[in-house]
Length: 74
Image (cartoon, rainbow, N blue to C red):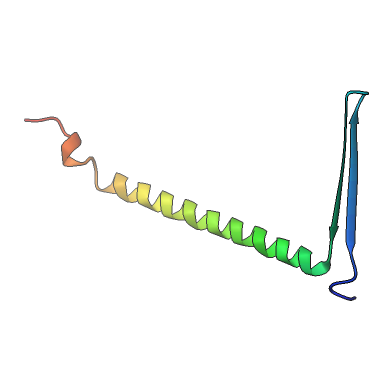
């Protein structure tokens, strides 16, 4: 398999009556598919880290109780 000359081709056509029609075509090399896979992996791992940090921060806030400014005056 040649990494730059072998191509993966996908095409799709969509039509709704006489009003709307659309066509799409993707033409990628194996190196391009690997690059897309790496990009998607990076996005998913990055969002997982963001969610983990956000949930850890909210758990710490609940453990310490309400802040002194939110308590009613005596």
